[in-house]
Length: 218
Length: 120
Image (tube, rainbow over all chains, first blue to last red):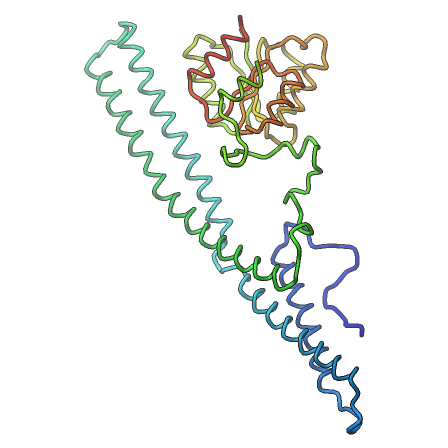
């Protein structure tokens, strides 16, 4: 049986930058196969001499049809929400950078005033003391970013957990084994220099503290 | 003493610059990645390089290898300051010739101590 798959192009797997097109293509494939199975199930049989092979084939196709319907339902659950999660994380990046810059600006303001007081070069002691105090207040206020970004990150996390559980169901439905899945999302070959780019790692993930690093290094 | 600070995050460059200023190093220049740093190193001489690892288009490890491959720079102190904290990373940096290795997030004391250890 050959089924025409819409949008299928040999040898060009979807790139990681186009997950939506990828999902749409999979959904298209599922719909095409499902339609073909339905068509075959609807074909008339020749009289009462329906043999075992045909019965088995029909049972198999029914199973396939059920699997495809379940797969489609999982893919529908993966469809991206109207508000982009990427935009939410972009906002977090911008807000944390803005807050960090503000905190550093205020800290440097306090350092400068403290240095004038310490060196005895301050021309207005009370004003410089007030400057240190005001800078500290500004630093406290700038830390409010944590509340806003925390809420944004929780929103993205909840969406990610939803997608993760849907994908796990999809993987189980397809009977995909763990060893078939890629070991790294970036595709870096094990042992290569690119594979050393892990980003921050917690101690659970094998990240070392400064003391352990020093022991290794010195 | 002229120091080159290499990091793709301006916030981190500013933190390191501030700490360097506190310990008396005023002659500090910045680069946003390994390639930019390499261009600067070719033009002027630096007495120390403090570099992040994970940067595009050239990583800190690649920069370190370029620096060590140049006979004139082979002995320039090079401190890796990075969030990469796995054993394999520390070993790779050591083998490539890093003078010290600091894990992010770090304290002012750690940075000061590591700088002191490579300067002496």
